Image (cartoon, rainbow, N blue to C red; front, side, top):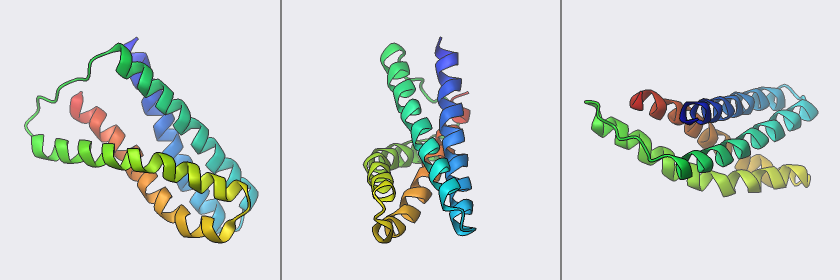
Length: 132
């Protein structure tokens, strides 16, 4: 069960990050409707990730890092954790602005949200590789 939850988590957050990158490409090339679909799908996958993460965390104790790169591991872990906590309400607000058509505000905050989101997705995978 642990491995299934882990892989489902990795897949959902990984696809979410890839969809954010896709959405950025789509908006830069003027494909607003496809951009919206990509970003809403990314948001849905991120929500699924949060649910999976909470279930896994409640059922299984966290793994301890035993490798030789502790400083790097803890930097990645803490920056990931802090930015994930910050990005959750930031992403909700960014999606809200886009859905409501408040594009001036959306354009200002969306690039920040996207960069943080991608960082969190990539470092999530890094943490997995550190621990395995």
